[in-house]
Length: 251
Length: 286
Image 1 (spheres, one colour):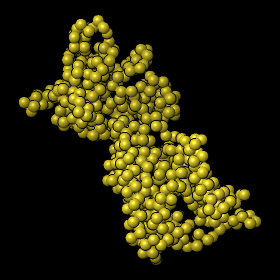
Image 2 (image 1 turned 135 degrees about the horizontal axis):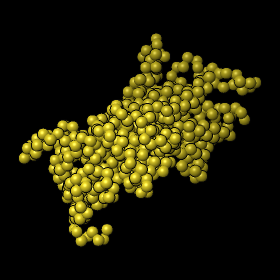
Image 3 (image 1 turned 45 degrees about the vertical axis):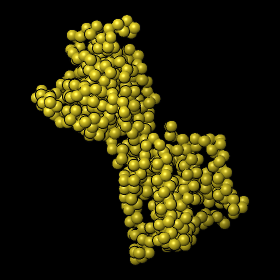
Image 4 (image 1 turned 135 degrees about the vertical axis):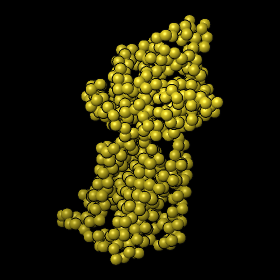
């Protein structure tokens, strides 16, 4: 049965697909069979409450959490559990939660680390500085001396420097002012215009729905809802988000 | 007075070479190499053996030690020490402590307990006359120059090259560095390879300047360790300054009483630990 479903996925030629993806953090199971697909040029949002498994899901895709080889297909090949370095060289890059910039590297050095994967493409230092001019002014400063929003730009830029086919963004809006969040998401069209596919993990449902084409909602390690972003109603999302419709009034 | 100052700084140059490898390995992978001193002694004995085995080309034989040292350091890290790294510093301490004992006993078996030295072609007895009644040895001056050059080279490597960027990135956040496509095991191995180049140089100079015996390692480690701690973890110029401070203090002690030099060094080290436990120029966070 597993073989059948894999063939079926292969036939649709999704850029990224997961089939019954399970993942563990130590002894605790964090993902219970995630079926997911991402098409070329798509922007998908993954939403869900804290502990729903969103970050684990991204970590599984990037190789930071070990999963079975066949459970993740990328560009027609099984990549589950490969070392992170090999996955980024195939074209799957992540903006990690909390940015995780290198504190002893300058802004420009942080960006150059992204180019380490050695993938050539449209994203270069000049191109990034054109999109985020403030970074060029501050390129010699230690990356962690910048404001939160500027650090997030560095983190996005660092991931783009590997010229990925798929960009994964974990909680871009975390700890940022709404106006900064808007500024960051305004850069998304320029990124997807190159044909890049993007997966954003987002706690803010409104933002997620606004910028994405499709939404996956996770709940306790399972997909509780999937659909086109503009077709899903508040009620549907609330139920998928919290599990019980009654809890909506508490949020 | 000026002579004490100069002699102290020249001694500091040697301590700096002892310490740079330790500083580098700690800076990149938070690994404290307890066998640092023993590796220096091992390098000295290897140089002595190579020079006598190929007596017709001693310089070439000693020169060949350096690529061997790099390869040895690389392999040691890649296949032994990488397995000891993790959140817990204990395994790496225990393994390098074990290596220290193994090296000491292997040297004792092979070369006996007799002190030996490396023939320097008269370099160790030559001196330069600076002024009336003030001359300095050519070899100590050469060692000092090598210490400055190595410190400068390592700092430049760290600050201005792609490899240095990789070293700092892996040291900052190993997981994210791997996410960028770095193989931390190889980066660590390169760092240790480079550390062993400096260790080999320190061993050759130590063998030329004085005699080496298989049991010398722990004392050399102590000087290296003191220099790194005084200077502050993670900064090469800090290590350089720390080594200078140690050399100077010891030299002042030696001048007061020949038995007081090393003791004075310890006192100063303790003083720094009390007044400024993070060292003079700390770069390392957490």
